[in-house]
Image 1 (cartoon, each protein chain N blue to C red):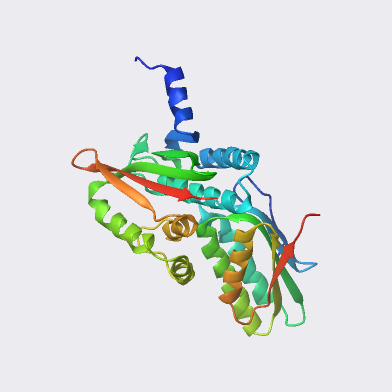
Image 2: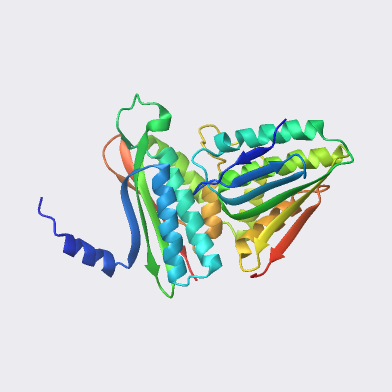
Length: 130
Length: 186
């Protein structure tokens, strides 16, 4: 399989899924016109990636999202459920949910996702001004 | 047509409207408006939480028009991807640095009951209840006829500072005008 790279637009995030570093990054804004359609290749890629993953490889999934709409929230939950199932099957995956210390909404969204998960390591990383 | 643009401009100013749009809405219209809206809120130093709330309500409302308005531009036989649905969005200042986000579109009169019950089911819930309902629905299959996740109204209610206000005005036998009014206090 190949790396997955999708350039950002005004309403969709940058997707950088790298097979060498095993860092999977989603960053930017997410309020696509058709959320299911936009994320369909992303979910497909993840499914295939998890299937071929061995239990020694450490994977980090980075979320650095400024704003996401409600239909994106559902897709993110689907992604976390996929990762959670993979962790239950012995894969080493963790999520870094990055947000600005002033962005209370993003922090709260991260906390809500974290509470809905049990075995997937979900790190809330709150960043200040640089 | 006898229409004085300066009068209209003055009325918009007097009603403290900072953004409005009426007509066919394309996804690119929402993208462009969101850029302008963010800049405007930044300029007014609305603060990140208020900005996020206004922005989020605007996106959910505008995407509802895009998905559900019963008024369309062009040929009904057009592929769904090409159709533009018509609606109106108005954002303005209210009270001490708060914002109102109003949105309206035409709906089929026989859809009123269902939409009304959807709004009523969320409009008086506490923030905690809304939060748990949102999380519960996020893991469920969307309802039939839903084009998104079916979470938009809950999201709007979560971000609103007051219970959602709404109205249905009859247009003719088949259609009514639906409006929803949301306020975000600073």
